[in-house]
Amino acid sequence: ARVPVLKHHRRSVARTPSGGWDLGRTRWGGVAHATSSSSAHADFHDASKTFTSLNIHPAVTCGLKVLLETDKPTVIQASAIPDILSNSHTVIAAETGSGKTVAYMAPIFSQIVNQKRDDQASGRKPKWHERGVVVVICPNATLARQVAAVAAELAKAVGASDEGAKVNVDCFVAGVPPPTSPPDVMVTTPATLLGVSDWFGKQKNRQRFVRTMRVVVFDEADVLLSGGLQEDILTLLEWLRIDDKWKRQDEREEGKDREQDAASSSSSSSSLPPA
Image (cartoon, rainbow, N blue to C red; front, side, top):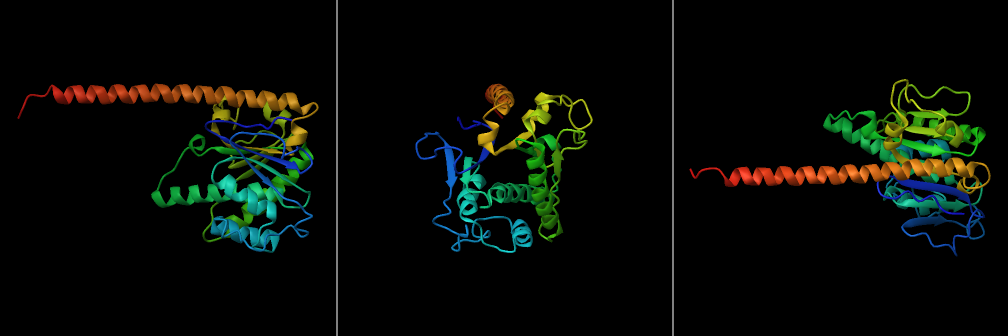
């Protein structure tokens, strides 16, 4: 199976069981691989590290202690967190029960809280499309609800911390109306996501929503990229590819405008009479 690598502006996290892909024999340029083996670590934990030493925000670290009753990450969490915090495209592969969901949720929450705290300190109030949305895509509604429950519990604990911030989590699956306001984290399924044309109760079209995706997580990526779900995922990847193309074009046009403004300013300065 081909890894969904989203180049240029946004980053992707693919989560899969260790047996999903042969990580050792596949070449994926520019993608960080986080793997673990239970045979080497029977209890999954890495005693040499803490969430604090991995640069997770203090409020998120406190929240993780509440949820996990430990401040020590599992092997896969210790491996994946630095890559995700560095904004790398990341593939997470490990056994069931090794903590893969927290491996991507912890650094994502850490970045959201850092951004919100910085905005608060500077008095900045960014619009929703400036802040962006984290989209977690699961193969079915059952898994989406499970992932959203973990995220909601973490958000509750993070929000209760004096150093924390409110992180809005929304589970959007079949039979549930689309969110009326932009969440920070939205957990959904491919069919549900593809079926919406207007977002957040307003005439915000699909193109504008796709542009706001700051991180895309493919949970159980091996399942998403096989069978009937594969076409939906390829459609979504095409949306993202086209949006990245538009962004590059916008950047080139903005660059040309800046060069023209600089040239115009320079010309005006040189034409001024001597004092």
